[in-house]
Length: 282
Length: 282
DNA sequence: TTTTTTCTGAAATATTCTTTGCAAAGTTTC
DNA sequence: GAAACTTTGCAAAGAATATTTCAGAAAAAA
Image 1 (cartoon, rainbow over the protein chains, first blue to last red):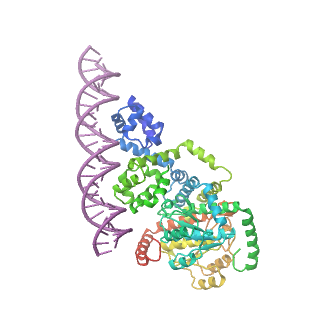
Image 2: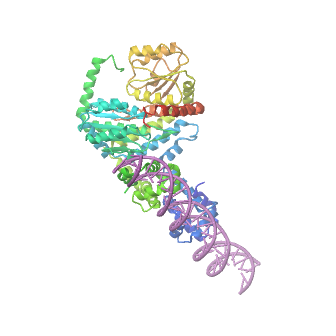
Image 3: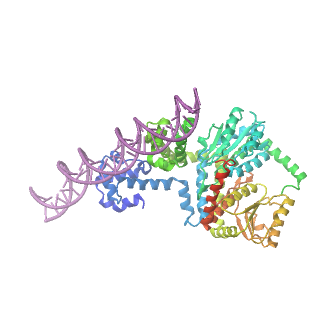
């Protein structure tokens, strides 16, 4: 039950001191959820014992239990995931799709907060000026590499998908220079080859753009540009929705950066398609 | 200064234990802001002493000081005034990311209305009982094929990725029967090979699950099961977020359908990984 | 290899937080 | 106005949390 409701119920049994405590708690529940009993007491101008006794009067075993309730409320209220889920999923338990949708929406909202357009502009500018864009990702990230490979090529970038095997990777890196850019993906299960690859990029003065989740800040050596935000979770595993949104935004930003090239390369694509009509579905 | 920034700065001095702690904290900062040192330690799987030492390494006098910083961040982030300010700031026209996020969210909400859990259950049951699952998609859909290929294999399904070229496709189809299932993707630019492929599936009595967007209902011959919802749009092109969410829900439903197989195949995967350790990143 | 340094966990210690018994002050009831 | 009851603050005991020290293990350097 919500703390506020609990208090309402017991309202008549509240002493003056209780009331002062309650007032402090309800005035700023978020901050209050962090306070210790003595902190509450100080703010309410009562003795800490009164705080403890109020908690007990409200049916808690002690003050920490009251605070835990407050914390739960804060979390369910603040966490976009929880909010959306409550709104969407009546019976989220057996409606898996609703649960996923809720999580994804929450994660996307977070994303809009964490990654700024400035960062995207900077990244797009790097890609735009690159002679070639090398793409690297392993595990599930290959799906994103695939996607970006297509999109970037359509925008007129010369791309190069780096393989995952050590030998081939090394071979591809030979012609790697400061005019190129490395666009890499790193998610929770960090690919083993990423570190040496970044190291190499540093040595070659190749700018690196890293798209990542919460492990982003831990990746070393540090990339030039880090675009990272926590991913949505579906059950046990994490989804690619958030990094994909970053990718999409990046491609759009790139297109805006240079209407000319993107458009003309699309036009040329049309022409070329005519000639190879046989290979690609329409 | 923000904790994440602080961590980024000190990154190079972080030990493995430090890193585990950092991961736990960054993965869910809101919840983490309530945790005690020993709670953090438990979640990160390290000793509490390591938590204290990390706090000190980051420049705090002790763990409580670190937590207080985290709490401050939560508060300033969550306070209504801040939220409003942020929402206004991002409403700016040139923030492409915000626009994309908005579109995606709208599309996801639609999805939750259009595809039912019953449909997912039916689809999952088909996949579960299949001898092999053949995957087909072209163009951007290959990213999803790639994704589903991995996920389904992890769940213990035998998969087969169908190639796009006419000859190879024909070759793969020879051993195609009624015990198999075809999982196909069809988006706005309908792949040219899809129609004959579906036709063939009908002749072979192979069940077909089609994941699609608005063109879904137009595809014929009609698939056994159609999971379709309009996709979000970013600028000119359409994104894969919605079909990807369908895929994720499908895999989750499949896992729930048979905890046994999914779990045991994951366990066997672990064992196998040990043997091939060299090939894959951790 | 050996030496040195760094890292980590266990245990001891210190600190902070919470609870409770008690007594004084204030209220209510008779 | 006195007895019974309630409320409150104080202080000390008790619990939890945080910090430090130390020793062994692991990694790096010699």
